Amino acid sequence: AQTVTQSQPEMSVQEAETVTLSCTYDTSESDYYLFWYKQPPSRQMILVIRQEAYKQQNATENRFSVNFQKAAKSFSLKISDSQLGDAAMYFCASDGGSQGNLIFGKGTKLSVKP
Amino acid sequence: KAGVTQTPRYLIKTRGQQVTLSCSPISGHRSVSWYQQTPGQGLQFLFEYFSETQRNKGNFPGRFSGRQFSNSRSEMNVSTLELGDSALYLCASSPQDGPLGYEQYFGPGTRLTVT
Image (cartoon, rainbow over all chains, first blue to last red; front, side, top):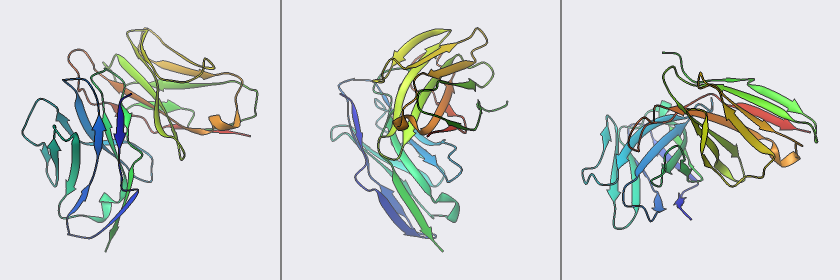
């Protein structure tokens, strides 16, 4: 079965500093996508960043970047210059090569200290 | 464009009853997926509909069913409710017209409480 594992239930970062959230996954598919979603207290899931498995270049979106290690099946999220608004649950997800079916990790609760 | 809308936002039901949740996708999106979110199990995939056909299904009992209409709006039905069905039910829509990897846009969710 395809799995996504987030080993850090909670993380904390000081405002303006950098934090890295970890994620590992397992899939037998050769082509797939990986995602990081953010879920603030409002519960609205928002896509943070997306990585296509066959692209070696790590995806970047403003202050958010990933470290994608395909062989190790690792997909970590780095948040630079952390802001108070970054406080949320962060979910790593894989589509496992299947349309319309995201497999989520258990999530990491990120707190940002002023 | 308007985002994904879900109705109702909150619902309280009694064990044994049935419930229907509704999801209106973003205009032009033909794929609608449903997820259940609970503190214990996290986010779990229920099913996905594309052009009125169920294309994928998660590992949930037959009490959970869904459908999609010609305008892409989708409904999810849970019959014979159990206490464990209490959860946040999220709907997501996506264009999904081609290869993989399209972003799924999530609605605000329906909070279902079963007493």
